[in-house]
Image (cartoon, rainbow, N blue to C red; front, side, top):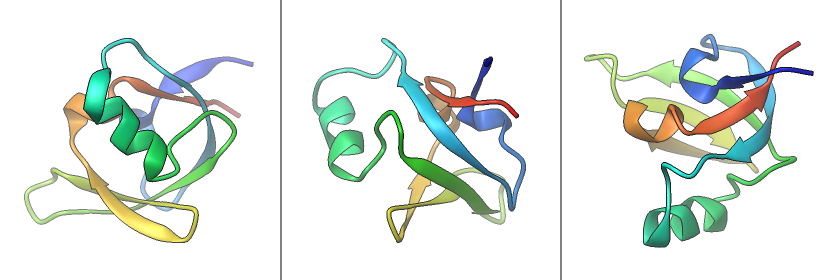
Amino acid sequence: ETMAPLSTLSQGKSSVISKIGDGISGTQRRRLLDLGIYPGATITHCFNSATGEPKAFEVLGSVIALRKEQTDFIFTLED
């Protein structure tokens, strides 16, 4: 299977997180892991803000907002 950045996931689509890249580290990485963004978790692109960024994603029953700088380093499995 191939991976794609979360930033390319279409609105309304779900995918499984496969990897968090090295571009996210330290407290930011720990925070994402605490929110349920870890390999194996299913994530859904819910909607975009009025300006297009940040984008809202649902993971483990919670909706969180992520910026492109973050979603470029979170990889999901492509169909």
